[in-house]
Length: 253
Length: 257
Image: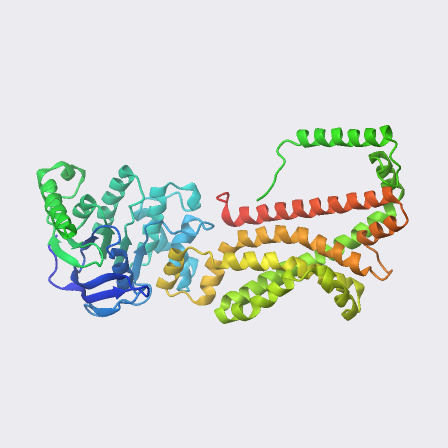
């Protein structure tokens, strides 16, 4: 896809110093193109998650700010997928996806269509009455994604969502995410420490340095296709290679 | 933790062997029954004094149950109040701890003096002993909600009330029941200790008074019979609470616990 010229949001010199003096982010500036999947890629502890929390409003920047194209999203207009599925263990799949609606005061009847749609997007039809402990790790993550998408957010934040899953499940969910992205109008910011995952999924990658995190490169990724076959092409390997080189550079003293 | 007897045969066998050894030893060494009565004599005493002892058992159980229900409601309510605000917790918790650490034996005589009704006085004593585990556990539970889930609630703009009812309370439920199981045993101990110290003023007498009475009169078999009922009452309370808690948690949590 071609990236639209207008970014959905621009982070403007964001820094974050925690009360204990740890500097997590240092002067981070980059654009998130509207409608794109943008990955924040960097080593563990580089402040990727902190950056995501600041964008979501869960945390505040110590300095700098975020410019939104148009109006800043209101409460509930941002979807968030955590590294763990983060489901209510005592509630079944349907009720877990219903949670954002319930908080917003919507009746079960009013939320029904959106929930059914989200369930079918993540291919969980027939599992609505299952409790989280009855599902595999990959399926739990699908529920988490369905919950985030059901409210039709304009921005979806994903914090290493597939990091704890096995590789097969991870590949499948990568493909599912790309497939889902085709059908929804949503900008996705995806945090990962996997170069392959970032290249496979992203329209754009922001490469971050070790702590204190800075964005050291913003790379557009233009693969000719995105399917399982591309993973074994020279084109894919080359893209991964150049991103890896940037990461290695950033870690050099 | 729930202790379940999957196979009742081994403990039953051990029990039989111990009872036989006890009876045998008492007969073999001709131990006088006012020092150690054999199980047969204890059973006989239980049979002969059944109306009296079971009546007392009922009194003790009544005190224990009322105290336990009050402990469950009071402990949970107090935990909720304290979890509402840090300053409430800081100002109330020290007094809850003082009530918990002061030996009930020392407070019981005062309570008996201050409270007119003997029944109410004993319930109050048992409640003081029993409420703390429910309070402490429920408070821990209310604070144990998954931080990511809390963030999720915040992200969707959940009110304090919504977070408390839909996230924190269900999270606290298993903790509450764990506390309740401890409180069950403590309520019984509280009821018995208070009656030991205070008596019941003659009206309705519980098992503790029967034990004292039998001791004074050297009716040791009857004392043992009363003791036996007390142990059974304790086991009964624990078992009932275990069943109640696994039933409730099954409904809420499935079998993921």
